Image (cartoon, rainbow, N blue to C red; front, top):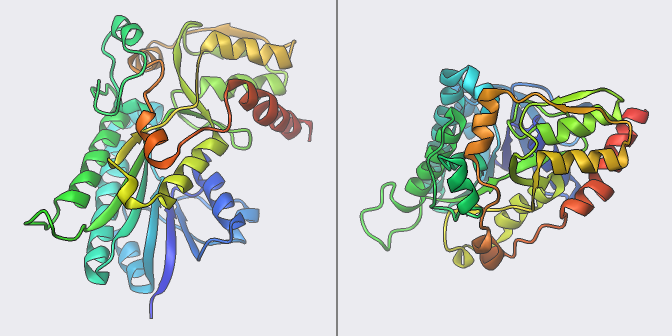
Length: 337
């Protein structure tokens, strides 16, 4: 008999490690994690971890024969900056991997006659504001506005959202009253800042990179202009959003994809907060044209009214609390060791 399990892909990444920690602390049912890298030993001891590739179909055929997935948290992805250097690899991971998992979840939903819940983190990268004037004039776009991504990662994520809606609403359904094949739920993350993991290839990483460099007494050259502004979120809120959306009653949800945000800062406003806590911090600006263009295409903030209304989204960390209570104390402690 197959064992019920919650599957987390990309478990060794920034969001993955924090989610595994949270679900394990909550005493959640059997956790099966997957990544091309091993988990840190303290997490590996609390889950069943498989080092493997989401593109390995034979691996998933074996897993499906052994486990009945009740939830899939699909976090595995190649992020925005890395994806621009290897667009075909990004497409394979971000699209082919997502498509394969959605098909797996839809097939299992059909076999079991009950929906598998598929939680999919998307990104602010799905937006493309086209000009700085548009960005200034439309600071809080809604989910369906300005969906003109300029990166492979953004294109991949937007397509993943569309595939999720298709599998939920249309796959093998000839009539409106037919049962849903799977339960796809998506949050669009802003730039995420973690105190416990080192940034790894995201275009919004100049925020956490400033902090990590300052805490080590190293100079930092920011790769965007001082006036560059995008939305951010502290990692604990990102994890809360995933578990909160997963717990929401389906009938309360008015859409499959939700914007979420916590606070918006310019690069210089982040630098000012870093200098407040690390007065000796050396922060300069050396904009990288490619990464600057990507950040300029993202909105200053996003409209997350639907998430607040439908499932009670409300971030615990505004900018002040994120820096003063979460980021600075924990990053300082990391490097004092």
